[in-house]
Amino acid sequence: MAHSVLNPTSVFQQGERARQKSRFSEALTFYQQARTAYEELGDADGCRDALVGIGDCLRMLGKFSQAQRAYESAVQLSQALEDPEGAAESLAGVGLSLRAQGNPERALPYLNAARGLYRKAQASEGEGFSLWALGSTYRFCGDLRKAVAHFHKALALAEQREDLPGKGYALCGLGGASRLMGRFPDTQRYYQEANALFENEGDVYGRAYSYCGLGNAARMRLDYDPAMRFFAKAEKLYARIGDKASFAYTVWSMATVHKMRGDYRRSTEAFARSQALFRETKDHRGLIYCRLGVGELALLQGKPKIAHRAFAGCVEKAQQYGYAAEACHALAGLALVDEDPDWATVKRAYRKCGLYFTPPPPPLNLP
Image (tube, rainbow, N blue to C red; front, side, top):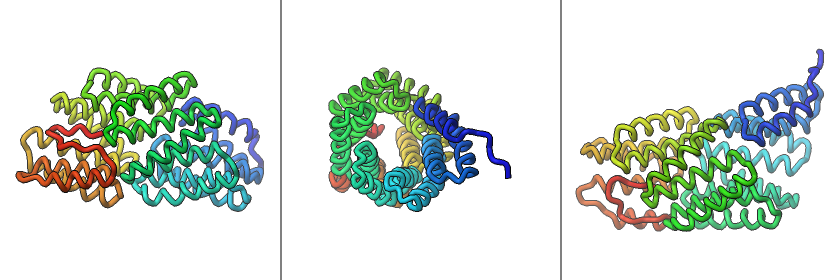
């Protein structure tokens, strides 16, 4: 059989450069070509690296189940090669793919295993990434205390290494957790610092991430004009990157602003748009947020039965997939619908997660 005329290392490096510029569709093509060429040469190390690159790009493009399969193949190759760092990187990818598919609890063992391998190999950059991933996964599980602890550990490692992008992502993690805990000035400060770092580093994905965070910080202060300006910046960058998953959350945030302003037509359209994106990426957490939005809109438009069904369905789905924070928000929605609301039970649920709580008047402005 004739071998490929491609130089796999050169093609792989083109993938790396495209990925660094957040051009994930372009990078994916290069990684796939490199993988084929490495396989023809029997180069297991190169094939594993290409598989990790493929997994990373597919995950950023919202193709989570495909990403998981690529990472699992990379885990097998890493184990055969007795390469702990390669195995750690691949295991972290599996964990993040599982989390994105609505399985945050299942993701934790993979991410903890990755951290353990990175620590054993004294690979502090990889350990910092796994700490950030663990922090955001604990946040999804509704354990804000563990989330904050892991983000602070990731931040400390990044500062020790003078890793500015790593510091930016840890700060964004702290910004999101602080928002859920009602620490809105901290949220603003963390995202502003992260955004300045990403702007200086030219990190396109980090800029989008921090712009969305700044928008949500403004939204929680009921400062809607700046919020929409930040969301518009994030939306433009995510569309350029091709990250449908993060893009969908930005659209959801914009729908929430429209709802808070009483523009129910635009809110309904934006929730429908984000819901379609979440369905495409099979993001259960995002779909729960959209159902919450549907329930809130029904409540505001005097349709309590529709609102009750939406909120009750949210409670069931959030508990099914282990999203404790989202379950709390759905319980708050049910309390708003009920004639005799049990706010004490809702308050206990929020406090158990370490979440910010105040009895919300309609419309809900979820953190």
